[in-house]
Image (cartoon, rainbow, N blue to C red; front, top):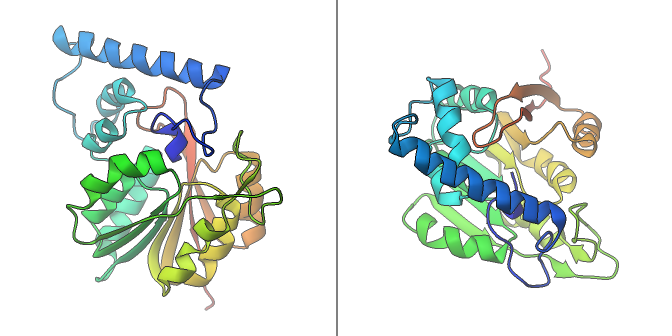
Amino acid sequence: MSADDRVEPEADAHTSVKGTLAYRMKTVYASGARGAGSALRAVKVLPKETPSRDDRLKHWAVSLTKVHDAMAIAELGVPWWTYRAIDVVDAWLCARSRPIRVFEFGSGASTLWLADRADEVNSVEHHAGFAKVMTPVLAERENVRFLVVGPQTSAHPKIGSQKPGHDHLDFSDYVATIDRVGGLFDLIVIDGRAREACLTASIPHIAPGGLIVYDNSRRGRYKRAILASGLNSRRLRGLTPTLPYPDETSVLSLHTTS
């Protein structure tokens, strides 16, 4: 999930959906879900404490009441991927030799979750408003390097985004952040803007045996980008925290030669 899905956009040049019908519908839904959650907890239909992730349906039911609230999602103790992907990546991280180095396009609950499981997390965020929310939280984590790299306004973007309202924004600097940080990463997470370009930029930085997590991979343009990458792809579809419908997160890896 991208930052624009997690926090109300700022009224600036980088706003994408504020004022649109889709945005208003999201806002109404989120407000209603939070209100319903408070009411259900008050009458003890939902527990006040978040259930274990192993109790999948209860955890998911509680998560539905925390939609579009970045800090509330973080309190669920999960990244915003499908539960199947969370399980796969969690097991992989537990088995991976230390130190573990991570790069992440798009910050949020996943940054905090990864910081508890990796030795170094580098996270780049494009959305200034969301960065203001995350900066004080991530400042408490010594193993997190938080980078805010917004898009540049351009009539002819070299690397654009197909997100509505992003037509004249160039994400070249954002995508190139992985090159500036440099080196190889055990895990790379692609969950921000210009994801197709982020995937291309990530491939040279995958450590041997490393993984790429590509969120919302059911979208057509993302499927095409993954196919064109030549990477192994494991599509993990199913329930996702806070979402009332199934989604898909893919886990990608390099082909190995025997």
